[in-house]
Length: 200
Image 1 (cartoon, rainbow, N blue to C red):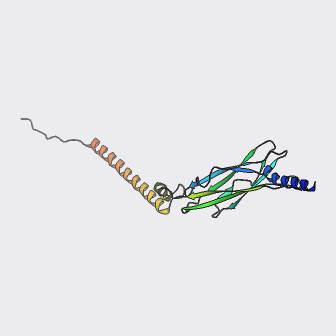
Image 2 (image 1 turned 90 degrees about the vertical axis):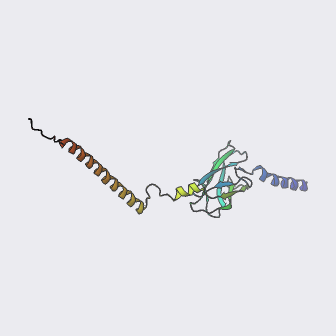
């Protein structure tokens, strides 16, 4: 009898973590890495599924493997799956710096289900998922655009050239207008002289 009770208890302990385990789905994996270029960003939605419960499920998210601090949880790090709901989407933002070099990295995110009521022995299931990140070079045309000064950040040399060009254009336009007015006045004041002939 005692052996049967121990066996049933062992089976219960083995089944309970499976029954209360959380599931995570996301779009990137080994053969389908997330590919980004310098100065790009991407928000990945991880869908966390919770087991059917008679109460809300609380999930915490944290970045566990993030070599160059490229990933962060968007907003809060604690999420609630209301009773009756099956899942919740947890956004993770990947931001690639402007000066990033080509590389391949692995980003890992840990999702943990918090224990519910105090004073009760409960499992706290956790799952860590990883996905590959590949940073590639920007195309040549983008590099050229990135080197161009942005609005509000013109260099002193550029400002000087623009001012000089503006002044030169103004002076040239003024000279053309003045010359046109002078030619018009000269035509108006011009009186042709004809030779005089003495009558016989």
